[in-house]
Image 1 (spheres, rainbow, N blue to C red):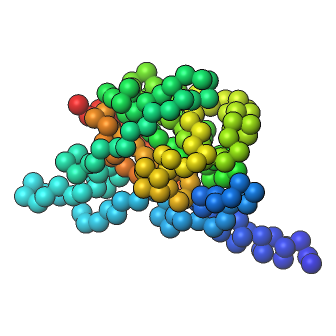
Image 2: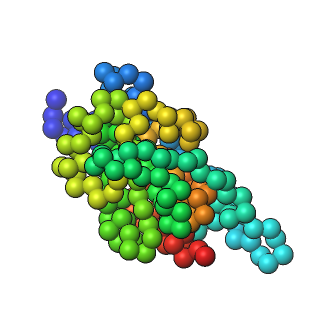
Image 3: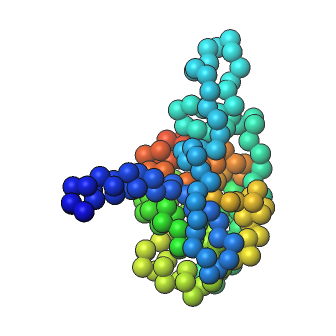
Length: 210
């Protein structure tokens, strides 16, 4: 086969790479498929910007954030983290928390982690806390070296049994990122890989909320 023909066949395949991974059912299986048809956010954004006489839309088109009055309380998370200490969502009240469900075997998860590292660096001093929840069924032996190699700068919880994934609605596609406001309410849910510039406006808006 000529090289030019081979390239024409490869390029469309690259474009079809999934934005997210299906949550692994068996620790020996490879991730298959994708559950994210619209990875930027699970909320639907419709209509134009509201005029003063129209109701506030349920989701802000500019940031993807759910209107404050419509946000629901995030389920509690309280667990040991990799370094042996404990972390809890209630203990982080007053901060903006990004809860990232991920796994070491998921390429879109790995691609998105550097963006979360950058966000923690840039906004941690302003009250942002990223927390990673690994769904790796093999646990610490695979997660610990990955975290060290990737130089992850935020706490990691291992949820091999899927306890927190179930509490958060049965996470099926990863990465899934829950943005939680200072009052402990879910303000946005993002399924699949998205670039940092898509997340930043949401983070900045949440940090600026009272």
